[in-house]
Amino acid sequence: MDTGRGTETDIAGVAAAIGDPSRAKVLLALAGGAALPASALAAEAGVSNSTISGHLARLREAKLLTAELDGRHRYYRLATPEVAAALEQLARIAQPLPVRSLRDDSRAQALLRARLCYDHLAGRLGVTLMAALLDRGVLDCESPEPGAAPDARAVYRLTDGGRAELAAFGVDTERLPRRRSTVRYCVDWGEKRHHLAGPLGAAVTGRMFDLGWLRKGRARRVVHLTDAGEQGLRETFGVPADRLSG
Image 1 (cartoon, rainbow, N blue to C red):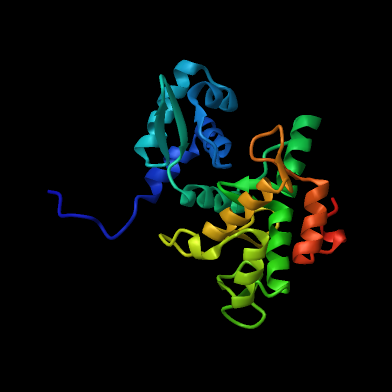
Image 2 (image 1 turned 90 degrees about the vertical axis):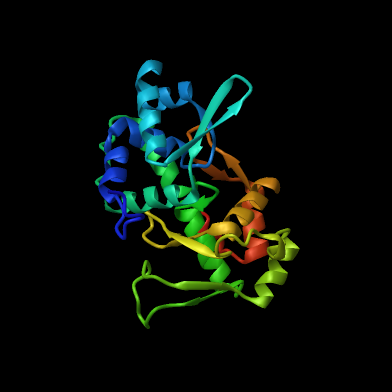
């Protein structure tokens, strides 16, 4: 008999849906926030178009994907930003896949440098930006205890001065969505430190694209900092040049 919503969540069910290598590749291909057709996801997963439909159905059943129609075509995307955050957390405890080619190594290094985590900037560049916002006083942080580990749970707040500085940058914090906390963070799986997430992280990342500071790479999720971006981060947020190299 159905007695209503349980007090425990079906972690095993979600883990089983993610656990297939082909489905994991599908989720990672979508982790940059884009919506992709089944044919593109089949290519990412290395399976046939007929096989991918079963994988997509399983991921939709697990509430990890949503589908949207555009004319006669159906596009898939991650159901929520929390799915992307969960993938980042799983990557922290997962063993790295073997690098089998120079292309694989180049892509892996590019993802570590700068990538999209759903709708916000991640990788070394994302962590560097977060640190710069803290150093500049745009954000302040309440650490749970003195000397806590860099990835310990923390509470970040936007300062009054930070609101003014971001407004000058082109981000109106008063107009950000209020359905979830304005300032959130993810623990970056490569750097083991925080990068800026949530509505503020998405707005800052979007503004960087608008200004031409970021451009998307050829590999999915990879982004590159442009020359204008290097100059902009130095002049706007005081990011030292040595933190932007490599």
